[in-house]
Amino acid sequence: MYHISDLKKYSRCPRLFQLDRTAEKAPFQKFIRLDEAVTDLAKEKLGIKECFLGARNDPPELALEALKTEEWLVKARFEYRQLRVKVPFLHRNGDGWDLYFLFVGLYPHADDRAFYCDTVYALQGIGLNLKDIRIIHLNADYVRKGELDTGSLFKVSDCFYTANNNPSQNVKDMITNSMSDISQIMDEMDRLDHDHPEAPVRTSKCTGRQKCRFYDSCFEEEAALPHNSILTLTGARYKYRMQSEGREFLADADPELIEGSPQQYAEIMADRKNGLFIDRMAVKTWLRSVSYPVTFLDFEWERYAIPPYDGMKPYDVLPFEYSVHVLHENGDVSHNVFLSVHDDRQELIESMLKDIPGQGTVMAYNAEGAEMIRISEMAEQFPQYARQLLDINSRMKDMQVPFVSGMVYDTRMAGVWSLKKIMSMMNDRSYKDLDINQGMDAVYNWRMLDREESDTDSGQIISQLKEYCGMDTYALMVVYKWLKEIAE
Ligand code: SF4
Image 1 (spheres, rainbow, N blue to C red):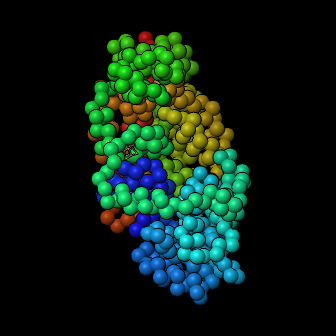
Image 2 (image 1 turned 45 degrees about the vertical axis):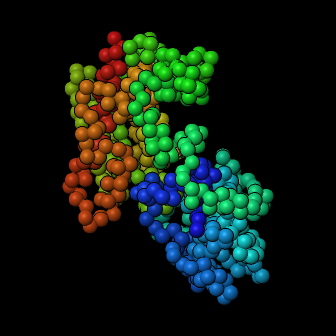
């Protein structure tokens, strides 16, 4: 028996499908927090009072039986030609059924059409007459005030959305036009299921949107590559070709086969100059725009699918921690960390406004993609502090800029531009020494605190979270000093 997720893996890579069938299931921690039983909330939106409610290991006959009598079927399990599908909502409509997909996101896009088509394939296979197909999804404009209002929290759409989130194709039309007979694919999956794994073939799907979880075992040899390997060349379409032509190192890159980005130039030059490239003029100009006191800032936050507190929208974030290191011109340093559990946004803002000096540069790593956005969101949710918050944003500089714009590259970065990687080159404290040393680990640990899980050692988690966030701003300060040093 197969699920739609198996079809998805097969279409990405037959070997992935095979390995996944036998591999131990990877522990799964959700990126996005979803504490609520979202199907129950969606049931409210659809006005479902009585229904057949399916469950995980239901035999398919149960749902088939329910089709004879029920008005609504929720989470019903059906099977057709070994394909087992879970159907969020089916509503009787005369001699047929209306199908509702549940999308726990803001804008359903047609790029996930295979999932929708495969579900409809199975339902049509068992002879269901589908009259209409809609998608129930979260409403991006909903702002929570008091109790959750499921009527406004969800939207029911009969269309998909474009990449810019504008309504586009009708759901039923798109599915009907994209449907194909997947019986041959299922036969091939059957064959593969009883065969040895295919040999690994590197394609863009190996690293695509998300690196395949079997990548390291498929291409073991890459783990032992030197940090100046040609394979570390950023955004290089032909790096494997160059490697196969005997160009093993960055310094050997073929000028005809690279894209010529400033990052690539910095990487190649670094390898030709004993490992470090620096565009001194550019770095000095960047440093000249930094003024004292310099505040290094970092937030930790949780992202919720369903807004838990007033003023929040679906997929809004709740900052729960910040760390600031303040470096004064005379070399003095002060450090503060704020950590809250549940909703202390206002307290966090008030504390941060006290801890960040009214003058000087505020610096964060990937500031434009994270800290500045968090601060703008706070200004929107708490307009009484908007002026001071936006003033911080006006003084913000992104520490990432000298690295990602090709002003500086050290081959020890091995094509990775994260603050952790850069910090690992410094002869200083290391993230590895911390009990919490990854951003998502910090979030998972905070979740245990926030949910008040019984076996949680709150004191220990709080101190580890403070250490981790504090390390980020300490690292920013160390890297800033290093930039000054190498620019001289
Ligand atoms: S790493 Fe590539 S070849 Fe290996 S299983 Fe994943 S997608 Fe397939």
